[in-house]
Length: 110
Image (cartoon, rainbow, N blue to C red):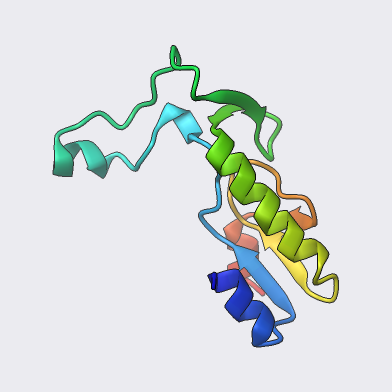
């Protein structure tokens, strides 16, 4: 059961999705501290056929994977079955159908 499922079962009226980029922003797999902690690069290889081009919520080119796209479809399916709930996408990655994109700062001020 996902956190979204739990929020739905709790009859939440608004669900904010945070960290659901579903893409590699700035071609990075992790935050900048990843290099410091693990000593490994956190950049994707654009030469790999694993990565697919897509547009983020700001209409900028980003890279994603089939796995992320499938996860996105699962989230969209949950959203479509719960039209009584407002879903807010607070991430800067792929757009998620059925959500309204908003900056996290707007959520904090609710």
